[in-house]
Amino acid sequence: MIDAVSYILLILVVLGLANGLPGLGTSLGARLFWITAPGILLLFITNVTALLFAAFAIAANIAVLCICNRIDNPRLSARAPYLVLLLLFVPDVFNELRGAPVLFLGSAFFIIRQMMTTAQAIKKKILFSDYLPALLAASFFFAALPSGPVFNGLDVMKDLKKRNLPQFGEGYYRIFEGFVFLFAISGFMSMGVEHIRMLEHGFAQHGNTLAYAGLHFVLLPLFSFGFLFGTFYGYSRTAEGVALVLGFSVPQNFDKPHLARDLGDYWKRWHRSMADFVMQYIYLPIMVTWANAKVALISAFVFMGLWHDFSPNFLIWGLGHGVGLAYGMPWAKRNGFPPLAIRVVSLTYVVSLSSVAHRVWF
Image (cartoon, rainbow, N blue to C red; front, side, top):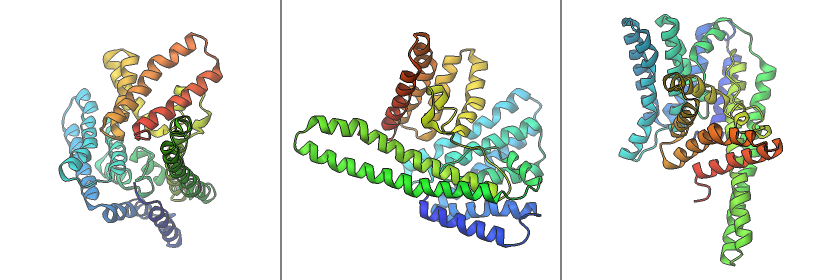
């Protein structure tokens, strides 16, 4: 994950320069520059290998597009962009071989955005002159590198070509809200996690099993999940705000997930852009192929889990969400569980799976 302080400083500098120099409101090239150039710089400073990987991924996407434009096979053209998703696992292999981290979450997000852009370019037969800027925007929009959201680069270019005026009010409000969550909320939750672990150690030494269990299995998961939400929401909200200030929009990633009525509603509120991608590009194709909604749903969430990290913990996370949605929620509703009970159990289930995935209990 990119350091939050460096990320905020970069945003303030870029927005200051972009809005202080002429050409932002009238030049498509200037807008594209301020969207992509800081992202290239950020990857270069953070990890040169990540930047090289981004360039390799761009070349792979261009190759897929060129091949699909030369063949007259709609079914093959529709499936070819999925080859790009294999790149998601390259950082894991690289890390195992070299022990040197690539910016994994950053690369996971831009590979998804590249794949969406390429798939839509093939489907709509977009000219290469329009495709390449869209691919660059999808790859290097600097504010979306740490935590998304995921989006189609063609949509960004469509917004930019409209020459919309920057939405300073709403944009800076979202950036400020992102700052608050990144530093105040996630900072408070992080201190809470550290304090709970310190108390746990003391209770364990004194043999107070009940107090230790309460801290370890109740408070620690809640504060850990709160830290995850504060960080993820903060990065996402900031990216949304930066986009508005630069004259385009990206999907809103969160919609009060703590108010979710059940597990299905939770995934309409949490990381919505990724959930939409998984439904459109993973769930629906598997559903059409297998004609089994439950298999498609579980497979889609297994993919989402392994997208986060190719590990047993996230495999369990993906299986847990898939099985819960495919079997758990329908069973609870068929058996007349009260809405409040479904809500409480769903949110508890989400926090528990997150604790497994992020090794909170280990």
